[in-house]
Image 1 (cartoon, helix red, strand yellow):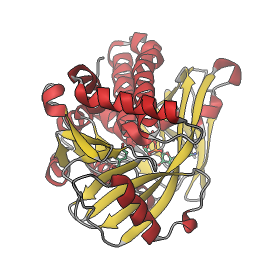
Image 2 (tube, rainbow, N blue to C red):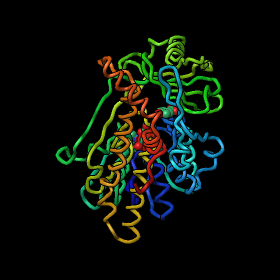
Image 3 (spheres, rainbow, N blue to C red):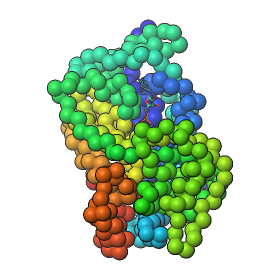
Image 4 (cartoon, rainbow, N blue to C red):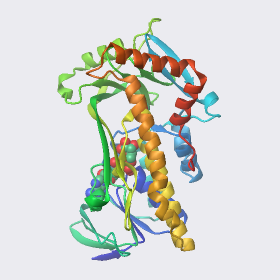
Length: 394
Ligand code: APR
Ligand code: PHB
């Protein structure tokens, strides 16, 4: 069977869904292809921090209602080291900007509902997506949906299929440059049924390694500890995880972690990855398909949203005014923000983790950086500006 759309979008993550919604507000037709089921997309636990710009965009698009009601506005974070907490006040340092804690799968539920309500199509459970003729003006996608082989004729293809997707491999190796860094540690993340232990996120540097206190809802905490990236989660009993959290988070004034049943636990790898350019012919990559950051800066979802905002604007310029300059500038425009976020995420990661080969000198360097960050208004402002997110047109 043959079908046609203007923009064929691979992947129903934040990038693909936001792109289809942004295009539809401009009357540009698209079709989203997703390999997983709707239920799986809507229940997989991922990130949870939305920058001010992401929140503003969702609100402008009329998608902010549940996020405002159920999400939590945070005006700062705590940096904790040497048994003492120091608040970084985003609201004051970053001109009234803040972050919102609202889980990524809740964002995805809102985006899917909005797209389907518009009468838009999202094909879930598609198999074997293949890209053809991406360097021509008539690229095509072939895939299987409900046992039927479909050929989708497009003007453009958006590769929004995440780090493990297929789109990126359509860029010839000679035309791409890949930059990677893997970190010698992972994060062991848990979901725990207990009320939040703190009003804001706590990023902790300790002799025993990094720990992070985050939340998902008034009844559910999200917590992480640095661990060996090759460790097996089966080696970690719930009691061991709780003990390690308590040791790393301990303060001189006896701060208490509120505890409850651990309902999920897993280990995530930490890496940085960027492909340049983010475009080849009529194929445009967006989000994790083009770049990965370690989660310490909470940038992954926000970068995906910024990419597709640029892409939607460039495609609108193409369809409405027959101009291609924004499409030509797409990769360069996105990569400026991507590399800023890569640096910020690497910087936060390097400052807050124990490295297997670090020595006393290296540890003093980390302390000096932490001390400067909490004592200097200029240094704290830099962290705040990056964390809440630089403006869209930065
Ligand atoms: N065919 C169709 N769909 C695919 C394929 C494929 N071959 N490969 C992957 N997908 C789907 C995945 O199932 C997923 O739903 O593409 C989607 C990609 O979504 P994400 O991985 O969430 O990537 P992105 O939209 O770029 O969002 C980046 O999501 O996971 C976080 O940490 C990440 O916050 C960051 C954000
Ligand atoms: C999360 O809540 O999952 C989270 C928060 C902050 C981070 C990373 C992850 O830096």
